[in-house]
Length: 485
Image 1: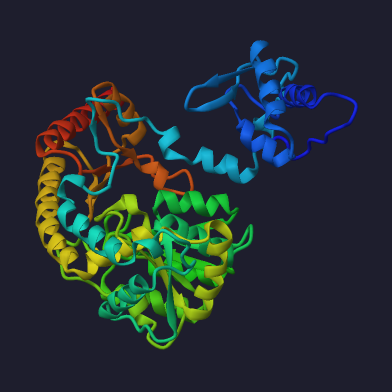
Image 2: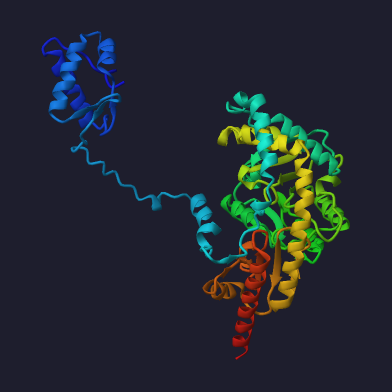
């Protein structure tokens, strides 16, 4: 209320004082052009004065063009404050923290070549939205909203929507994981879950071990926290266990971050025997594992392998970060962290300090959708679709792109090692010809990976897959021939 500080004096007429108060408020920038003034009736009531005095003041201001009355809408300020310069200027570039600069430097959306209309893009590994079962999701939304919509639109709990937490605990139990003494925190996808874990468990310069290569988003988060990343090379079946043992023996690591299933970017699925070996190495050195359950549901060429977390039957040394974002509704941004209940309690407080909680409406609708059995039906449909597309893409890569080797057993992408040709050189030329993809070096925390590329095929038609891969192959051959000259 603009008249909250207004005091009537006995020396001037009241309407003159009101006029001056409004002019002063405009001068000070408290009232902007277009600001709505309280009605004459409201002002007279608040100030306990005659309404005629207020009407007289408003008429005087309107005659000067300072305010204007709009029938049926009210009275508004009609002029701009000309005396206030409003020229506070900040050199924000010099105020950005190391954290902000690192995040921008490693932002692939900003720093990698962008998709343009008409291009064939192999950049994305997001699911094909045309496969989403929208009717089932709409039904889930209407059902849950009709029952508890009023509660879902109010504040929720930082830990998450309890029915969804219970559902996910059962989901983990069916994967062979012991859920006794464990709990779950619902997060905004993998990214927030991983970030909260590192914020809670690490300090700058702490050592974290991961596979080489690894998830580029994870690299960005680890670097933004100032961690000392020790990358361990991968074999064709996953992380090199001898090098892992050697690194843990020589380095006082705080954490080990691994993607054992459908590894991003290689697509490798670590087999059961190696998982046991990796677990026993970490157990020997008493180093906790952060397991990224990336794309676990999409396997095409072999049977499912239980997560690393299933091996820690009696302990609490593995934290599992889960998400369905690469196969189902990534726009909902629903992920979870599964781990020791005392750790989850700490993470819950960190989550609450950051953003209070993830959307309860989204969580409730997602839970209703999953609970209805729609997810199982959806998975049955998309496994065949993506398997056929994966096999088609693999055939085209082998047919058209000269390569040293190809990696990938499932998921929505294929990782290719080229022969003496840099991926960025290929990308630069392909971009001119209307094809874009991810260069492999973004998945390395060091300067390696220059001869690798990742091709995501989930949202590309078979016609464009063949056309685009042929263009990539032509460019690789041209650069190879040029290098021989």
